[in-house]
Amino acid sequence: MADVREERVAAAKARMLELGTKFIERSRGELATMRAGLARLRAGDAAALSEIRHFAHKMAGTGATLGFDAFGQRAARLEALIDAQPAGRVPDAEVQEKLAAHVAALESQLAADADARGAGPAPPAG
Image 1 (cartoon, rainbow, N blue to C red):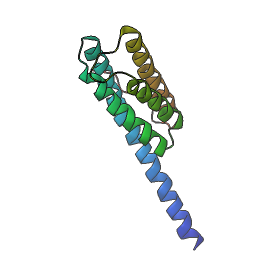
Image 2 (tube, rainbow, N blue to C red):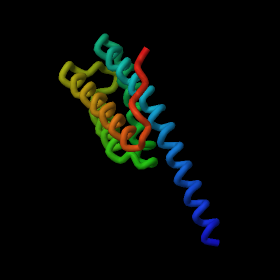
Image 3 (cartoon, rainbow, N blue to C red):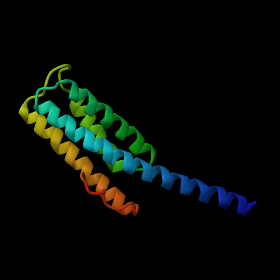
Image 4 (cartoon, rainbow, N blue to C red):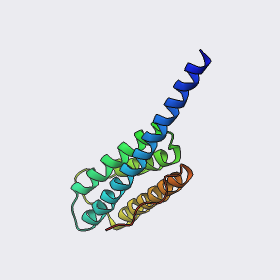
């Protein structure tokens, strides 16, 4: 009986590790998309803010679910900053700087989380 339980616990831990690795990989891509969204925002595309918010919301929820607490909290702060902006308008330069700082903080946190879980650094871009 104890062996079956131990096997189930081991299988659950392995599955959570697998999901965490997939989350890191997916988040790396989504952060790159967020960076591109910031560039579109600077160019005057107000719709980019909604896209950035979408990814921040996903990262906050999934991060918290999978044990990436600090990352999830950072993503939630980014989402809250976006939610505080008037809908359909490009934020001013000061807010855009704050948005970029939040995205950079997410990238740093994800790198730290990846290192802590042995997922390694992101592959080189390009």
